[in-house]
Length: 242
View 1 (cartoon, rainbow, N blue to C red):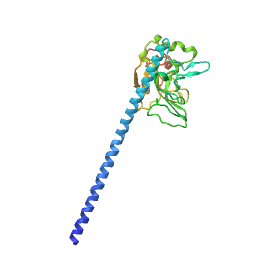
View 2 (spheres, helix red, strand yellow):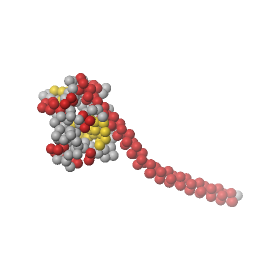
View 3 (spheres, rainbow, N blue to C red):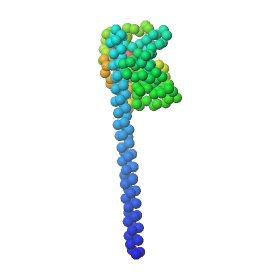
View 4 (tube, helix red, strand yellow):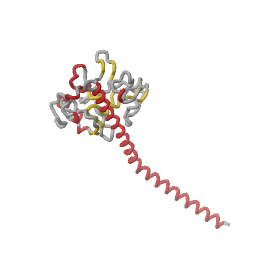
């Protein structure tokens, strides 16, 4: 009787060791796989973001086709600042009717106290206590009342190189600029890349060093004069001038 008890106890001790070994192996595999899973999830988010930025550009081209080749300005009525390009209300937003979205209290690509846009970047930190934009519109293109010629798409020198929209994190009107400021500049949140859509309707991811900007070392004047930012009056028809 005593012999059987000893054998039974020994079997239990061996089974427990096996269980601990299996748990340890699973923990090691999980630790090894987690970074890969996170990277895969980020690639999925980056792809979804690319589709959204691309759709913004195409909605702008549709707007131009309905408005004598002029792409959307910042405001449809600059004096009273009504009909904002990113307004989520399809009766007010200049691009919203082309996107099939109607969120009257939330701007395109925004996260705010009233909600989260259906058109927001999936990698954007959704903090509803702040009013932040995940996408920006080229400030030189959308311009003001005196920048109308930069919105006439038939005047663009190289549409494939002129940016419309891109990733950002801004609290200031959803515009994106060539200046090295805390707000209103491209944000490289997709594994050090940002998605950019262009005036010909295509979208591509670029790193900081690939586009003209003060943050990469360009002078303010050279960044501004690049065809990347100014599609009409650009002095530099490439992105490499510093």
